[in-house]
Image (cartoon, helix red, strand yellow):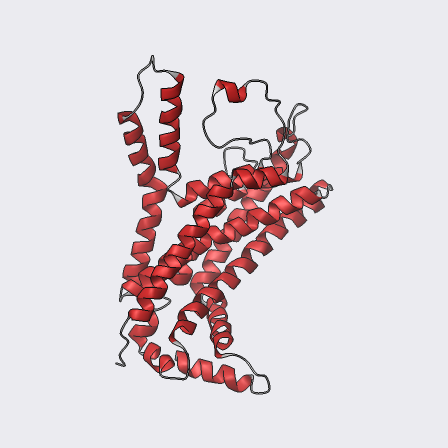
Length: 332
């Protein structure tokens, strides 16, 4: 069934309601996503890894709690961060599998419609061109948001049933902020894949381009930073100022990676005892008392990472939007 026929059927079904064409396309895109096999396979994969990490956390949570633990008051957050070494924790799985979800939902958003000849038919209707691209993004974001909130609340529900200790108000808010941050993280990869879908004619090419960028940041970029770090490493008798500048440069290079920004932000949100994400001098460390930060201070600490993720997401969306609006679309 071609795209235009599906949209017309949606309009006929909703003939008793006044619905904007934009939301008709969104409804159609959501239906296509949740019925596609690639989405079902990815959701099953993410759900299985979520259950595996949750099982690991529940079986090792008693060992993770210590009498002198500064995070003892945040017992519930350990469900998202505990790992015994055999399986990564929940947020590590999200950091690794989230990009695949975003790439899979956007790599053929535009070029598949163009290759089928349905893109020109849709745009020949009284529908604004930007409605199509915006609706595809909004539909994918709705699907991603529902899935991540469902997984997050599933972990909280199973944890509450298993350990019998409800989360505090601050723990609940930290988990909600973590879910929202995960959505923005996946949104970056979604917009990047949509950009490749606009730029490349074949869906396979856009999919490979998205996976190549993901592999570059996940594997090769860290190696490049390590080589640069060895080249600019200070001598053994370097001063404290030189060591501080070296660590600051190394961390700045690492934070170009989206997954590093996500890891820093989620670590601070889910581990309140983390008080700094950069190098500290002895003057800054002297006299400090270990203890968890309040939620507001944790958010301020990771605000630059969150802003970086949002800015990268907006940049990819703007590039794909401008490229799509300038693209010439001819009927086949």
